[in-house]
Image (cartoon, rainbow, N blue to C red; front, side):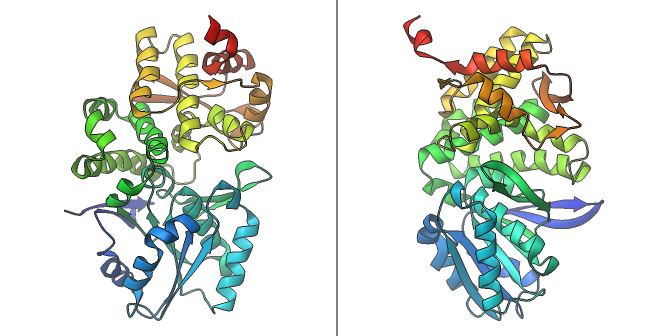
Length: 369
């Protein structure tokens, strides 16, 4: 059974998140957005296109003025201004104007690229998020953050552009490769850690069903996870304050992601960054030692890393300082006051960051010890 959640902007309804178990309800949702006279462009990557591209395009036939599809190569390497330029060119050649709409069908890369193209093409056209990965459903499809990487620096070019709709087919999660699925779970766990201790406990209690991808449990998980993000982005839609709490695990995580040339998935790096941030929280006596070790160890049953081989500590430290979350030369670090309560801190020192990186840095010497 479908569920619906409304997201507000300036205390007024902005868009709905629809939680469902197939693509069949998409035409009706688009009809409610008065798409009958619009041209629609489905933007997707090469892998998702093989799975769902033709199915979604068929569903749009006769429901809009024209439906076309743009496919780009799968992977983070495509998340660049060059891909956005190619989308602009395609839209121009297909005669898209300001009344038309883009549909982002895929994971976080697709959603970010499509959203940025929508924010900037003809100074802005409507778009819909149709996230198919756990990472995108739990995090990137909600809240209107769009952007692309620049010279390997993550999301350095972007804009805020709210979607008209977020349509989540939860059954798509059952087709994900294990590694991709569990990488996305890091963002779900993050929501419990920063804002909702009972949800964090629920995740642990339902560990088996989550790992087995039971659809009933997945729906409850996504509704509760998305509600955490909804509350945060409604309060702070353009990240002037509390929205930065959603960056828990991301400062060191993004640095590891770049240092490793994106060989690790984003969610895997968030898990590593979360362990590092929890470590600093423990050392500052915000968390008890037992809480730190529980947080660290609870990533393991969900197949997420809590250490990584041979990190260049000084390189990671340097990369944290080029993160877009720097403010007046200071890193806005997100720490845990307790499970379910995150705080923004601007006083984390280089020494603390180095100690946290060393905590997750696994070397050959460690193996021998």
